[in-house]
Length: 202
Ligand SMILES: Nc1nc2c(ncn2[C@@H]2O[C@H](COP(=O)(O)OP(=O)(O)O)[C@@H](O)[C@H]2O)c(=O)[nH]1
Ligand SMILES: [Mg+2]
Image (cartoon, rainbow, N blue to C red; front, side, top):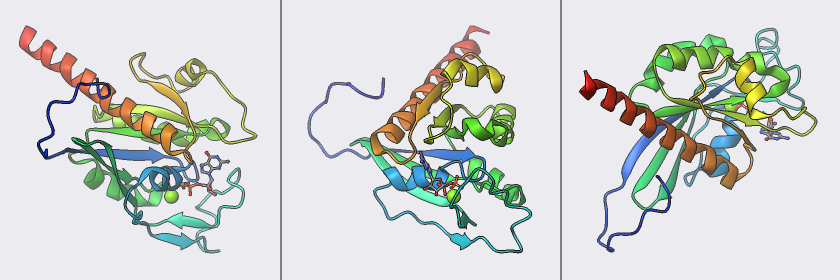
């Protein structure tokens, strides 16, 4: 359990730092999510969507989006005094995929953000983490105006393993995002424990 552990004395502790990736399609709310929880000014490189990028950056369904993250979003959140998460938003556009393997190195797990209006936009991210056995949680970012689907229909539509948590969230809300991040840590720890158990059993 991440939360609720009893405190053991007040000696200053060196926090464990973990790296979490934030992935998902273009305009799904990655930059918003990192910005909502980060204690440090999010390091981001937004670029005004140019006419040149328009045929590639499909903005249909992403009303009012005029900037795009070129490099990545980076943020930090102290979940508990001994647990600090570093967040790395993956670039949403296919043409920046060369950055993914760099980003994925050393990551504990990932959040795949999904928008039910454009669920297919997160297929690539789901495939990516499944193939590399990187633990991930699917966060359904609940935009107003988008139909609400139960987590289980999203799981079915994405053909996810039954162990993969699917949670509804609001990328703009700090507490909501924090819950999703804790789910990622817990899910990754559970998977690691079961892999260890499987390894020692053989
Ligand atoms: N209504 C609503 N808008 C959101 C939410 N999350 C993000 N947005 C908006 O959707 C647009 C795209 O979000 P952004 O974080 O830039 O997406 P990214 O491309 O994945 O980084 C922005 O205009 C956000 O303000 C949400 O949960 N609800
Ligand atoms: Mg972004």
